[in-house]
Length: 245
Figure 1 (cartoon, rainbow, N blue to C red):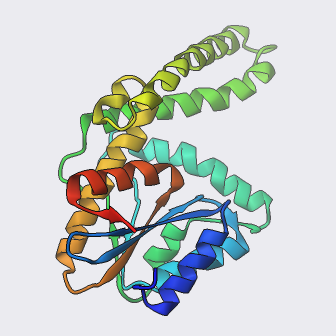
Figure 2 (figure 1 turned 90 degrees about the vertical axis):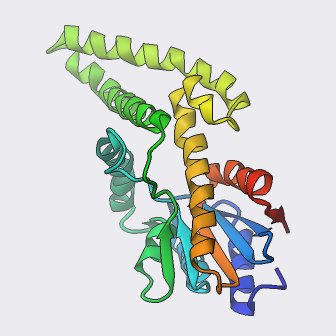
């Protein structure tokens, strides 16, 4: 941490103190450059949100997790079913709950913010994961309404409950799949894992490209959901010569 500029070091230390909102990991590349990995909760209170914004503002080069909805089959629909509850929660909290540091990084007027998941070829498993998760969340939301539908459309309500039960039973495969999460094929055990493992690989490759494209920048920060941090850092260490500081 002492190799970082003072402003960046202090900002990362404040973020690390907000344990419910952030995790902080520091890596060093084979060329000696530092990479700060900021794992975040995508929703947080105002204090934590301000700290995250301060972190990304301290770095000239920033990489961010950004699901490429337009490239992935069902990606736009998945974005809607995931973002709608978040937006509703922020509205109901009257702004007390804030959004992602990723958005703050993209809105900074100076420096470079790179979407790490941009790729020419989307892994097939990510298309499958997107379609599966979209169907899962839609059925889950409808299942909440099933009791209200029962008096008017009992057949439809029963069908929704049945499909919901099938999804719930299939969740047991996720327990097995977690053991194999580090493998790119883990999505075949359960598609939920593809939204993690496959995107970990995309973000790791995107980070290497980002650093290659900006060879004069001595330190960079990447921001992603906390669930990605372990898989992402493992790939950088095992395949790209990074070491944990």
